[in-house]
Length: 134
Image 1 (cartoon, rainbow, N blue to C red):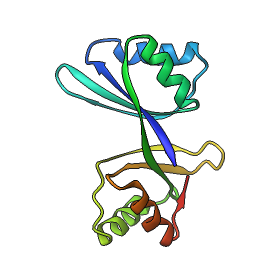
Image 2: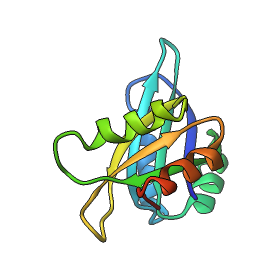
Image 3: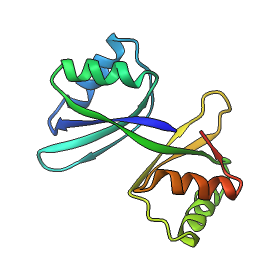
Image 4: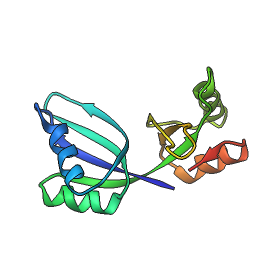
């Protein structure tokens, strides 16, 4: 089971860089990220090398953040890979809240990050169909 750091941040110039600067100073590597914004605030979601340290450091610097369980599925870097996973999820009547991509630095393979209401159900569903989960 992977965990991501979700950070609630003001939508203003330099906000994302401020977060990355804090993590850099603490030696925390960002392995994958996605940002979602609204007019005033946004959510930055990240896979980092040290989730607990990132949470405490960001909190100490005034950020509202939390850890969230997510699923990481390794997929081949070829046409249709993402579509195959989405078809399997649709066949299982599984709704996905959001997705983003990062890479497995060890294998060089793309990883799709999935968040869904029932993480364990989705993990079991994908494992049973031969997908590699991290």
